Image 1 (cartoon, one colour):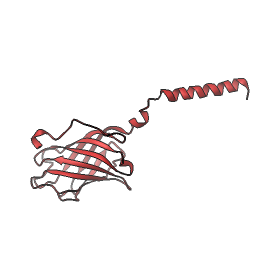
Image 2 (cartoon, rainbow, N blue to C red):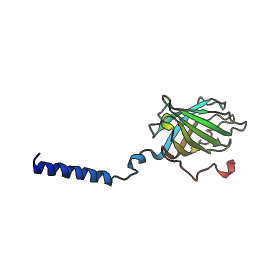
Image 3 (cartoon, rainbow, N blue to C red):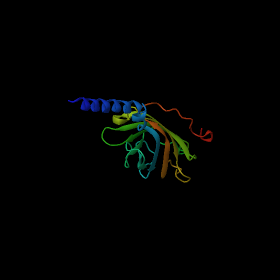
Image 4 (tube, one colour):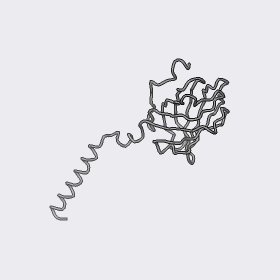
Length: 167
């Protein structure tokens, strides 16, 4: 290899390493966190344990349209719900969450803490919003939105909580 060729290879190597050093450390993981936006329809949710809603839109590929949101416990007589949830996606991937919403409220919370497969390190604090008339007296839910921060790497603390009139 001639001197100019060696110099060129060395220069390209130095520039490549310098470019890597300038990439922020959090860049690779920043795609693993953000604000999650989901909507779901609940025609299969009866208020009984094991009934479910289905994701109809998502801004995160980990929760594709068609993901099932399965309630572990039944709704109370007033339609309130304080239950664990399992979001069943594809393959062996499931996210574990907990939902709290009072019967007459339109707003509640869903907190995720881990799961299986790609959700092992998943965390999220979402606000659940079901529009007026979205929750029937028997606990059935017509349509809801879930929005809030998520991360696949770190636990997220959030100030969002169930409104005081629902406690």
